[in-house]
Length: 369
Image (tube, rainbow, N blue to C red):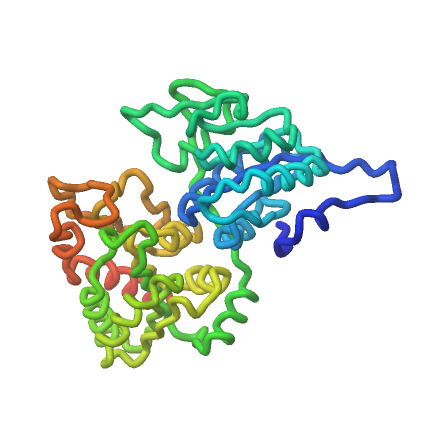
């Protein structure tokens, strides 16, 4: 697996004085902009590597998603996009496409459904451009897939279907998403953050980039931390998330003053470090978020908390996984904020409902050690 850091696109274009050396043919995959979606695209990369074992797979990704792609064994090079989120930047995309021409890609798989990302491989002259219809992308996509709007595919088979020829219903068996983290990276991360590798670690992911409706209340997380501290006092609890999640994690920390082993790390770690902590966790408690799907792809025991989203659409795939949902009549509403104003789908999910699987996981962990 290549673990090379992202470089400028210009420096990626290699020149060799030995004309007898034949560079491998290359595939380009344009990754989704959401961390969880990027994780669930990994089985597509595995299928492509199986179909084209001699081809190198480059992935074009936003900077905040790139660390996830670097943890995928199939990826040769991760190229970080220079574009602003949501901006068309047509001139910049044209310039970038001209540089991509030097990589001589034989095919591009465009996972975002927007027109602006489909323009890049079209402007780069990549002959085979595969993706879903999305935003009226006829012409720029020349191998067009369609999903069933009545019965849409779950996220993993949705992306994996791009490895096959377009068909109304593609029956395929998908491997679950998989990420790889080295033990040396885990140990270095623990040292950097002042954590003990000898003590059990539980990760809380209280954030939700999509919207507040997906958040389990801070008071519930704090109560759960207190229960864990009483029953499993040797356990370290870390709060993970982006800088946007710092306020809710600060609130949990302030409500957990009696829990001495809780560490508020939201906004204080890189995504690489968060991935390393999750890779070593005894358990991960998470809202439906990117960190949940990272934990799943690392095959960590997870307790996934679903409220306004569908637990069947993007479930965790870990060997030990608990998907908790009250399945209220108003759910899944898939709204960023509760349209009814009460957020019962998360408020009424009690701490005891989450503690029970945690206890089962930790008891099993103690017996194995």
